[in-house]
Image (tube, rainbow, N blue to C red):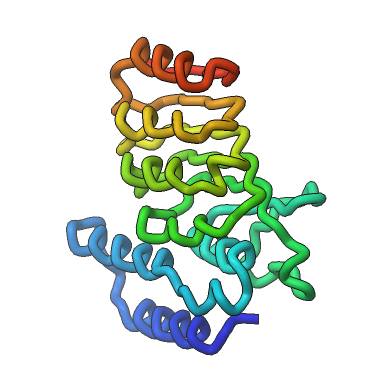
Length: 206
């Protein structure tokens, strides 16, 4: 169930949305959706303390359009309103698929307490920037647990963000596809061969 603060937040957003006239695709509408996505990414530290990092992160990710899969389960959780109930300690996030989601750097504090994430897929994430990957690569829990990562069609990612991933010391597989901001492919290969010699690096870049 949603906590009172979350219900109030969604209620306020709904009221604001219902009161809006149709917006043209302009700077004003882009600003509005950017603001709304920032609201969805705002970290609720009390919620993390109350329900634990995995549940709070699940709510954040699904709120932003991503999906999660828990340890011991094959089914992906896609519906915010159908997240499992019962013992919250039972559900540990093992995989994250952020395809077409609006996750952004200000929400990455939700990742800090996750200890079992083995795979992350970032695909068509318009708000993912180098700072996000740098932040992710500095999280000690992910340095220990993360085994696979895919970054696809994220236009704001450059070489600097990708290079930061060499801190994920247990990474076994990294797929990079359709990243126009990544220019120095040979340098990336060199960096990862030195830092993570056993990792499989798959490059599908122009």
